[in-house]
Amino acid sequence: MKNMKIPITQSREWQKLQNDLKESSFLEENEHFYYLAIKKSTPVGNYLYLPYGPVLEEKSDFKAALKSLEELAEKENCIFVRIEPQIPDLKLPTNAKKSKDLSPKETWMLDLTGNEDELKSKLPSRLLRYYKGHENKGIKIETSKNPSDIHYLLDLQKALADKKGINTFSEHYLETELKQDFATLYLVKYTDEETKKTEIVAAGLVFDYEDTRYNLQGAQNDTGRSLHATGILTIQLIMDAYKDGKKLFDFWGIAPEGAPKDHPWAGFTNFKKTFAGYEVDYVGTYDIVLKPSKYKLYKLLRSARRHIG
Image (cartoon, rainbow, N blue to C red; front, side):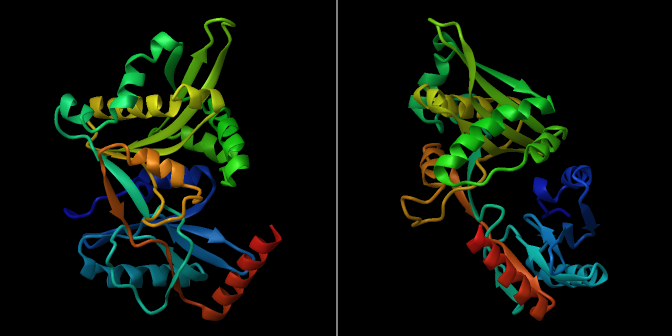
C-alpha cells in the first residue's frame, strides 16, 4: 500500500462515523486497492457509495477494484455503485454514468511544509494583519468537542443557506461528526466594547486525519463579515494545523474553472484562492450501473423529486 493515500472519507475512522449514524458499510483492503463502501437505500433499491473511493495502488488495479465492488453489490442487491476516485485521468468502464458531484471534484490545497515564515508568505497579508490584531478588537477564538455546541455552526449555516440556496446537514449528523476523534469545532466570539454583549459571529468544523487538516464547513453572520471573522478563523485553522505537524490544508471544494459569477461557491472560491495554494482536480462522481432498468427508474424518480421540491 506504499502508493495509497487514504482520504479521511475512506478511512476506518470514517467507517466508525457511518456506524454511529446506523449506516451499513463495507471495508475492503488488500495490496492492490482499498475502499469503504456505504450502502444507501432508495425506493427503487440499494446502491453503494464510496466517498473519494476506491483508492488504488496503481491505475491498473482499477479493474480488480471494480470487480470486487460489483461482487459486493450483487451480494447486497444493489442497482449501482457510486464511485469518486481521486484520480483525474482514470479510464472509466462503459457502464459508468456521470452523476452530480457529491464530494468536491475540485479543491484548493495549501502546502504546510517548511518553516513558519515560509508558511506565512503564502497567507494573504491583509488577513494576517486582521489576525494579529483580532484580540484587541474583542475577538476570541475557542475550540470545542462538545456536540451540543454544533448548533452555533448550524444556526449560521441556515441563515447563509436561506440567502444562497445551499443545503445544510441535519443537527444530528453534525453532532455525530463532532463526536468523532478527528473532528474539532472552532467558534469565533465577539464582545462589543460598548454593550459588553458577546455573540458567536463565525464557526468552522475541521477534520484532522494523518498529515491533512480538512476545512469542511464554516459560516459567519453579518457582524462576522464586517470583522473579517472567517479570514481570521482560517488563519487560526492553518496555524494550528502547522503547529500540529500537518503537511496539507485542504480547503474542501472550489467552483470549477469558468463557473459563472453566480455559482453558489463563487465567493468561497475567490476567498480560498487568495491563499498561495494549488488546485487539485479529481475524476468526479460516477455511477457504475449494474441494473440498467432499475437505474433508469431511480434517475426518473430523482428528477421528479427535484422538480417537485
